[in-house]
Image (cartoon, rainbow, N blue to C red):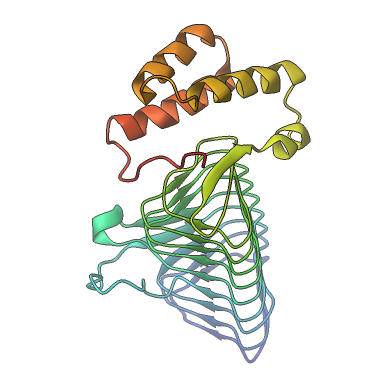
Length: 265
């Protein structure tokens, strides 16, 4: 049987695994699913069609699955899916999707959402994402694996943040951030590669050196972005890291992405 504190309010319709722990004063709605070993410490609200994956811990005063902060939302039965082994700290807010955004908000596995972080409707977070204190994502934002969003940062709606990217603290991110890139500023600009993150993740020196050379070519002053992409693609065809960046930029060139690209100053 799940361990449910007597002061918690758990709707009879909720699906609660036998080894879940629900602390004092939590409120769980009828369409919620809490999977194996989920732990809600206290004063946590989980509502809507929300699924929380195994081994995820949610800290006091988090609000998970309540309706989107979107005036166009009309009560559609959208979902929020949170993966496994996540740490969702105090006062975090995560909203489900909307009809205009695919009806789904998703948080991957092994993510850390620090105090006061906000994940708006229709956001898609990969695995091992870190959002520092009071980092906020507007609607429809996509965040790749191992990306870090620094404290007090704000990300514009529809922005894509590539895998292994770093958003510096107190940044305002208006445009897409390339994989492995580092951005900073009140209107964020690309300030190089996330070299510290690349080294910590165990990428080889050769891979990093190749990525640095490709970066210099991609953001040189000569030629158009299309021309530079083709030049880099020809020279670095064997580099998986460079190809990640090229594929990301091509989505901007083809207008598949709704935002343009964050550029160096």
